[in-house]
Length: 74
Image (cartoon, rainbow, N blue to C red; front, top):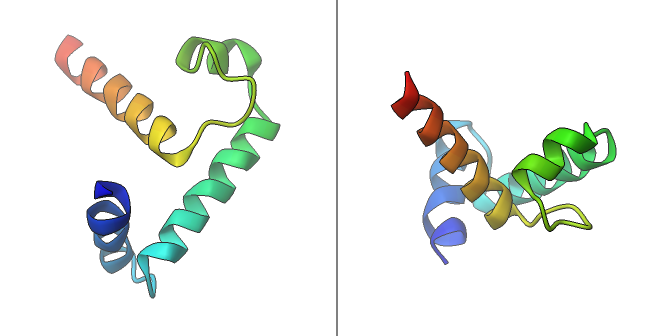
């Protein structure tokens, strides 16, 4: 719920999209494109059990966790 009610509309406003739905769609398309062109070793490291492209929610949570981890290491 927080993605569709809070995150997507905030990103839409920040990036001058018309709606949160456009943001959600753009993220989904970007994930699918990245999945198609992926480095399998890197994707297996980030998404070990994924046999198909991850959902927006899973992708965003894993990337956010990786970014947080990198910020605490430095």
